[in-house]
Image (cartoon, rainbow, N blue to C red; front, side, top):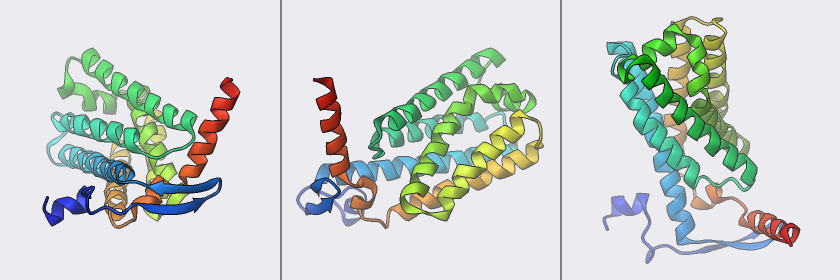
Length: 225
């Protein structure tokens, strides 16, 4: 494996496990943890780049083919939600449910308006369709909130606030199309910045306190008995 590849996916031979003291005991950051963290960061970056590219194409060439970028965006977000470390399982599950509902809503929108080519223009012309794709962006907002809650990154709070403002503004017709696209473009750029900055962090930062996860699991097991 090359040095560049190792920077993204550390090899098992070169990785050294780290032991930390958590709230409920010691825990170890394993090679598997490090791989999951890198996959999460790459998936988040793919989501951000696709989000940005789709909006840029909309601004330059119109919405007809910009919808294609929704596919890698949704895939990237779905994978990120698979590998994200959220120890509150109901919250993690809720974000995944929002993602699934948003994907189904986008598919329904495409079928209802006669194909993907009409998706974004129909969404712009009929704000009520925001309810269909809104859950997808709610899941993305949840990721932004998690990142701000854990790391206090300014780009994370910007991402968390701008997406809901844009969608609610469009749904209520309080904001015009240019303002909505401007807010979404800003949030997409912040997502790319957020993802890129995460590659300089230790894997342990994204994994968090695994002793909390072990404790919650033991509590759930005890309640099940």
